[in-house]
Each structure stands twice: as C-alpha cells, then as structure tokens.
Length: 274
Image (cartoon, rainbow, N blue to C red; front, side):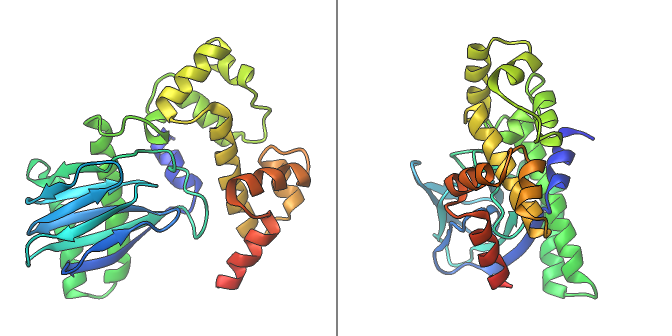
C-alpha cells in the first residue's frame, strides 16, 4: 500500500459538498478539524487568509486548504459561482493534517482540464439530481480531493507537513512504521536509527519537513488513533495499550494536553451529539 492510500484508509475519510451556487455574501471557513476545497467556476472573488495579502481570483481555480488555515471568500462580482467541499477524518476526530500548510494552495483549472471535467460533473450531478446523485457526488468529491493533492505535491505547493513527509524518501518508511505500529516504543533515538541519522540531525530534519518535532507528531498521531478507537467502543485501557501508552493515566494526560478533555469527557460529548 502506498503512503497516501495508507493515510486515507487509516481513518474514516469523509467529504461533503456543503455549498454550490452563486455566492452573494462573504463566506468564512474555520470549523475545527476540517479541511476545505473551493472550486471557483465563474466570476471573481477575493481570498482573505491570515498572514497573507488578499488575493483577487478572476478565473476558474481550486483553492485547497487541508487544515488550520483560517480564510474567507469575498465576492467581487455578482456572478460568482462556486462549490465548496469540506473533508475530515471522522466527526470531532483530530485532523492528522493539522500541521500541513499555512497558506492555501491555488490550482488554475485552465491548466488542468481533467480537474475541470470532474468539477463540472459534480456540479451537473447536483443540478440534475438523478437517482443516486448524493452517493455519486460523495465519491466524486473524494476523487477530486485526491487529484488535487497529487497536483499540489507535483507542483511543490505542499512544502511541509504529513503529505510531504509521506512522499519523502527518507521519512516515508519511518512514518508508515509509526502509523502501523503506534504502540512501539518510539523514542527519538529509535526513530533516528530507523533513518540512519544522529538524534540531532534527525530532529532538525523531521521538523523541517513535517513542521513539528518527532515527539509532537507521534503524540498527535496516537491521540487521533485513540479517538477513532474510542468511538468504536473500545475501553480506555485497551485503547491506551493499542496506541502506545502504558496505562490509562498516561493516555488521559496526553489526551487532555492535545484535546483539552479526558477521553471519557470527549466521548460523552460525542455521544450527546448523536
């Protein structure tokens, strides 16, 4: 299994087409743990994102924001036609792409006719609403998402984070080993030995590619897995063992630090939402 396939099958990856049509007012996109794709079909708009100069868009494009990039879209013309897709890895489960990018990637669709074709098919299904259209849209959005990620990687638009790490020849084997064996004793020396580096060199290299330290990444991954297992009904003690914590208290401390709640509190809140 290749690295990207592994990532998107490890969790219950979900996409949702949540808006399509004429955008006549400002839309702001900042829901926790979600990423976004925006397809700008016609008209012009202004993309506002934290820490970046406003960007005017006046030709068809896709905007890719995998996580944590607070942004909004302001119409400039009256004929702004868009569709917006959100994606996550399970309701209220920490997004493993949290450290992906601090700038939204832009793909111009006059340079990518296949992406344009898929985007138009999504809009056609939504407009015509034939039998099974909702399932078709869901699958098409997932396909569209994967094509966008490929293009971003090929064009060097993803310059750090998990997606880049999973395609890095040095780090990819280590990341896959961590993902498949989270309960292993992954201290800094063990990880450095896996890639034949000194601890100091490995720590610096990992953070340069991934955007976070090895220990912070390991914690984030383990807690994301713990959330998924808890929602499947596994007891906290079993989950702790499966994701690499020696006992309940160790998992609880890490969980509170990452999520701000104990596993029981988080799980109770999620059941209350159903």
